[in-house]
Image (cartoon, rainbow, N blue to C red):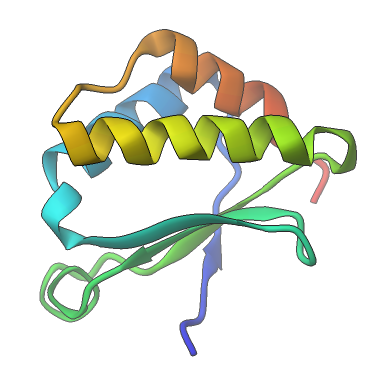
Amino acid sequence: MASFTTVIPTSPQEVFTSLEKLFENRSHVSSVTVDEASRTVRVDLDWAANKMGGVPDFQIPVKAGVILEAREVVDQLRRRFETGTPVSRDLAERLFQCVDSRR
């Protein structure tokens, strides 16, 4: 089972920059999911990213009332990764609005 480092972005720009980096390296993204039990968006990276790249798997805490919105954003993000469509600022803004910065 993967261990996840908690990351709390401080701005929509930070989310956008992180999503762009994930998109550029999407071949190393094993999964992006919403864990309802822990109220987090989890990004699981492959072995190469973890061990050779030094990038840990990470999670972003999500506010309790916006789990469905977070799931919708993650679904759109996965579709963009699969089709090779770059991430939009609007998508980053929507994800940032879901972030629970108090955890």
